[in-house]
Image (cartoon, rainbow, N blue to C red; front, side, top):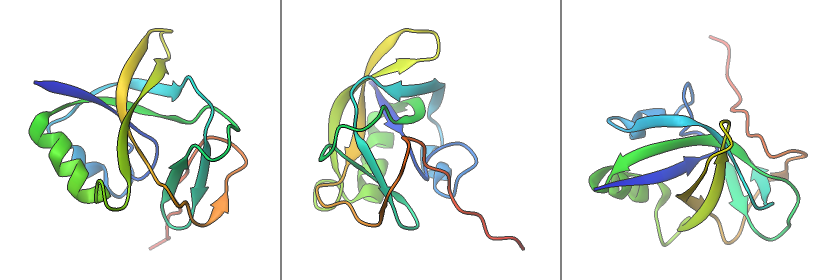
Length: 122
């Protein structure tokens, strides 16, 4: 069975943890239909403590095994907590997807719902 997962941080294409989505099918760019807050240190924290903005990210179809791998990365339910939300694709279609929220976000509150990973020049 496949599940849909909305990613908004280091799991996005081209970012440091994207390899955790190996075998997943990219469904498109999406944003949350509800408003949330994003905080960040060296990685982001999705929070519902403030309803500030839709959060931008990507939608993937993953296998049950793939979802369990993501749970390991996100330390669900001990650190991040996975729950279902509604997202809207660029096409206008909506989907229900899993997303990882953090109950105690850390770092700087981002001004907009977009996380950009800092890259170090080599």
